[in-house]
Length: 153
Image (cartoon, rainbow, N blue to C red; front, side, top):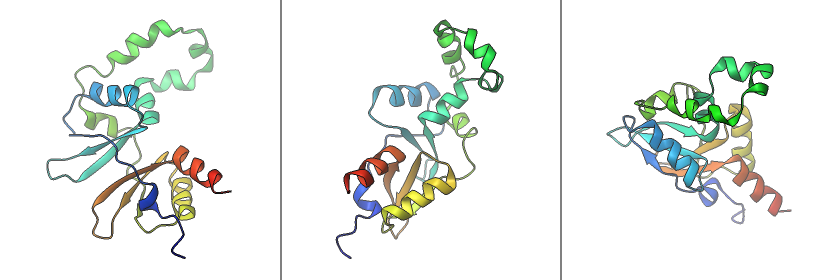
């Protein structure tokens, strides 16, 4: 059984920001770094949440636009500047309010199937990995997990 890949083996570090950091910084990290999420920690290094690429898009795109296919079909990319203005003067904490109430988490010893089940149950695109003492080890994205599962065939 020692040859089983565990969550700790697949977890990678993600950038982190304080809740009062500018929301634009989270957007910049997601756009420029090869990551799909940014961890948000408070002053005690406690995880407050995760801003993913999907939740950022959900914040940028007003709900009425996301739900109206006819309207979004006529809007061009020239509205991108207006969407990015939605981040102006906002802290990262406000991006968390559009995410799920809790962050999907697994123990470092979780198998990849357990990680997959947690992602499916939560609907999240990223799961946080913690060691037995509760220390944050990193995260596993859905795409990273799928790549590993398919590579194991």
